Figure 1 (cartoon, rainbow, N blue to C red):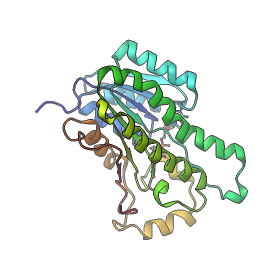
Figure 2: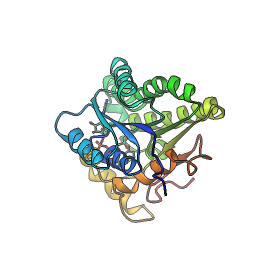
Figure 3: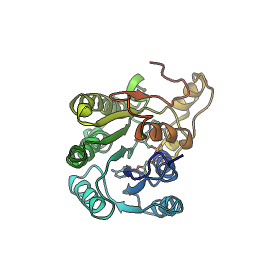
Length: 251
Ligand SMILES: NC(=O)c1ccc[n+]([C@@H]2O[C@H](COP(=O)([O-])OP(=O)(O)OC[C@H]3O[C@@H](n4cnc5c(N)ncnc54)[C@H](O)[C@@H]3O)[C@@H](O)[C@H]2O)c1
């Protein structure tokens, strides 16, 4: 059987760690050419680059901050030059902090919106001209179950993630008839560095309330991204929010 993403050029943001790294490797295994984007210093990006390159398809890594428009313009230009037009975009980069609204600074709120929501707009805006020219595109935005149900201490994060879901639904209504699908994945709690600083106050009742009784692994989220990116598996999904979430949210 042909690799489901053979011939595709996928750009994955936040690829140096956690869910983004797992999606990148699953895409490489599925035959995609890859642009891996992250702002993190350190060797995380190089490590996942090497793992993906071992599958034999072209891999490019770009250090960029996806909340900065000039960085986003640059990473799409370099990808177009070296790998061709991006036809699969995964907006995965994200940050999480815990802070109650009464204690929250405007700067903290703005940073959360910039990294988790503005970046999704910037990357979609940069990807769309190429996808419209191709008449094909798969946009996958990583939201969160917290964007669906809220979370104490997470108002800024849940506002950004609910915004991602609303943005994706509207975009799907604009572009689906032109060959471009846009969907969200809203994972539940997944074991990655992101949630490492969350307090027991948040994690203990969350774990107790999960129908599956356990947190997930990044590798258990990645197949949903492969499904949404692949042909024909993803063809009928648009404007949807898929929830690999241990049953935390049922819609
Ligand atoms: N882990 C969870 O429980 C969980 C649950 C629901 C949703 N999510 C979402 O999944 C996505 C991935 O999270 P994760 O758990 O793998 O986290 P992670 O911290 O392991 O990885 C996130 C990556 O994004 C990168 N990043 C952050 N800000 C960036 C920026 N401005 N520009 C470029 N790169 C940036 C980080 O450097 C990091 O490598 C996030 O959007 C997160 O909100 C995670």
